[in-house]
Length: 351
Image (cartoon, rainbow, N blue to C red; front, top):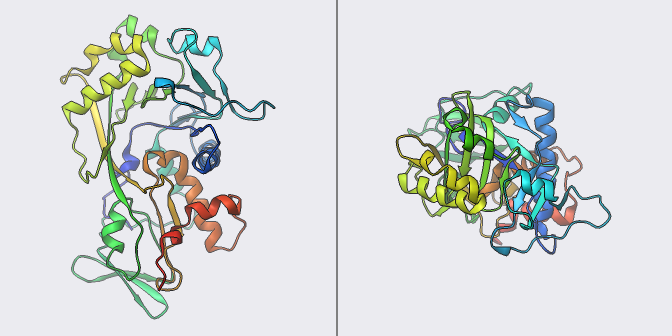
């Protein structure tokens, strides 16, 4: 059930984003979970989407802006992340010697297309325009109700996957204590055909991230090839208007990430030319999502999938697989020592 009239009304309406691993010097829990998530997302994309229009396994160059410490490459060569080669650094338009990593198993995805394809799964029925305002457990089933208290449906299992809006729906229930927070983000984008010949020559042939991310050659919502830079981070903001000052913030972000390109594209951020998209993501304090049973004792049958922050593309497919495996008592797609870090019930208070 979705209160919207169709796809992409929330953060999944992002025009384009990256599936790329998080890296850390000690290969921490977030890095390992994100790496597994990226693999799951890319496998799903390969199965369901059209390469070149819906997604692209292009590899991603990570510019280590500001001397951030990163995980060293795996010496045995089995890791898909390694130090970027001089040729890759030069192709991005960065000076030789720029600290950077190359993620071979990474690429861009248009989330709208991924969501649409997954909703075609046999057995899935979507009820659009259904605003759920409350949940009530009656006997062995949950009843979901609209704003007038009228029942919209009943089932023994309910999964709430409404990002930050999950908080308002679940907070009234006894024992709910998942600390969901809003995180607004805005990207800036434009059409590649509007760039000058000089600007087009400077476009990297693959996405670059490290201080925000830059993607080019990916279809815009209008269908023509575009460029995308972002996103901003505004905590504790529950609304998502497109703001001129955030276009300027993204211009500065591009100038740091890809200095030569940023300087050349300054005019593209003129308010009369640049386009924008903004959305509200949902975060948790440790930057790991909350998936599965919320509180099996007090809230049996009620599950959550939220808190993916700015890594929704990299984590959402994995979270869905974790939830499905849990409900069906199937083997989990993560080792137990990792899956426990993302269980929603880690926030359950003792009765």
